Length: 247
Image 1 (cartoon, rainbow, N blue to C red):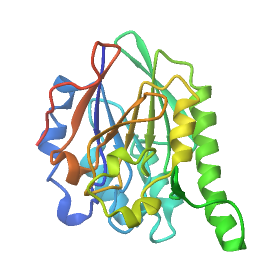
Image 2 (cartoon, one colour):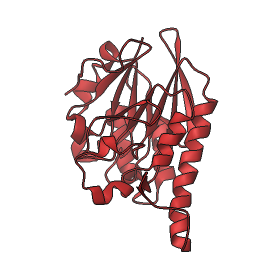
Image 3 (spheres, rainbow, N blue to C red):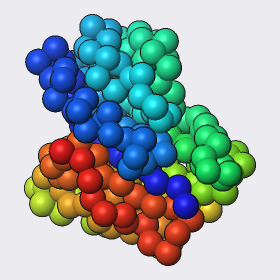
């Protein structure tokens, strides 16, 4: 069995440092790895990234993250990623990593993702250049996730995104903004690989649980949704969901 702790949308700045750390220090007894589904910072500055690294780095379990839209706000996302990497945190963007855990190989493939909407209410790659650019961005992120998922040689595979791959985990958000919270192309990429679990954030007023059309469990781990430092999910066991823990 592999136990994965997950959270997203922690929006760390100086005033947040110390809030999550007590629960994170207990991770080795509760989980084998920590995955963070984007919006690590408030405005995407290297200084805020350093605060995140101080709060979420140096743990006794591996930490794997993707960036979110907030982490791109200052157009310094490469610097943000470098600060995190220097702190020993694995940052994924259209890439994957494989962790050796309890004699098993856990594969994590990640991307920020992008918006665009879902079946019956989505943007299409047609018309004005601006619309083609928007949907083209969506398609590029999804294609990169698909490649990363399919390239990971592992016993259990997790997709980690910021934007949502299904509409079910957006329930609670206004319908009018679904297209800005996720896209069906991410769900297709997840279904095109032997994915065991998909984790995302971004939808603060959404719902925790959903499934892709292919049946992959999807969990919205945005902190405002799970309302604690992390949830724990199980792989290579009879159930995905473990007892919810954290603070």
